[in-house]
Image (cartoon, rainbow, N blue to C red; front, top):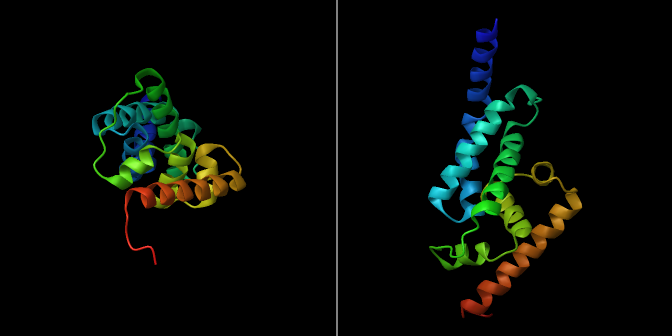
Length: 154
C-alpha cells in the first residue's frame, strides 16, 4: 500500500511542481542574485515541496510552489548572505538594490506576471500592502535609473 501512495506523490509532484520550475528558478535567481545559489535554493524548495505535496490543496500550484521557494531563499540568505552581488546591467543592479520586500513584489509582478492576489498569497501580506510595495518599488526604480541614465527629459 505504501508504494502506491509514493507513486501517487511522485505523479502529483510532477504535475504540480514541474510546470512551474522555470518560474521557481527565476524567483530564486532574483532573490539570491546568483545562478548557482538559485539552483541550491530551488533544489531545497523541491525537496520541501515533495515532502509537503500531500498538504497541497490543489488550488494554485504556482503560488504554492513560489511560496516554498521564497521561504527556502530566505533560509538560504540567512545562512549565506553574500556581500557582493555581480549584476549584469543597470536595471538588474537597481532591482537588486531594492529592499527585499519591494524586490520580491516587483519581480513576482513584473518579471513573473503574478496577479495581486497571487502575490499576496505567496508573500503572506494583504493585497493593499502588495499594491503599495509595488508602487514604491517602481518609484524607487524610476528614480534610481533616472539619476543614472541622463536621457531625454522631455
